Length: 108
Image (cartoon, rainbow, N blue to C red; front, side):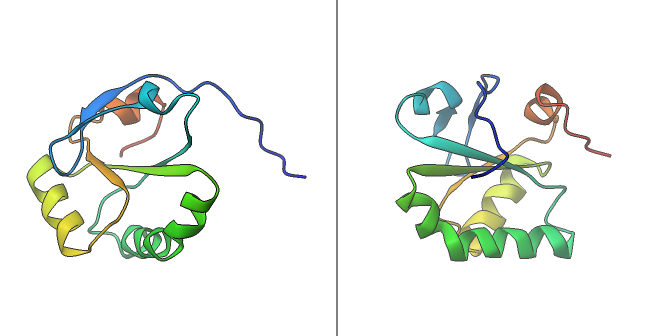
């Protein structure tokens, strides 16, 4: 048994690293969603965390869970890093911290 209780996440919509519109509500009743906020790809810990998620992504898919990673980089830098590192899940650059602020995630 785990200690996590499901909750209704706050809605957002944003373009992902490939320019596709992602709406959190599009997953409701279809898949679980793991939101991952990182502090930026300049930090080794964040790069390592993304690499671990990439490595384990199949396990999340097998559990009907989509990963949405959100980072503070501008959209162009975010998209470039995402592509260069062959990330298989959804990534969203959030340079104005709109999604991070919505969830009360510290960005500084």
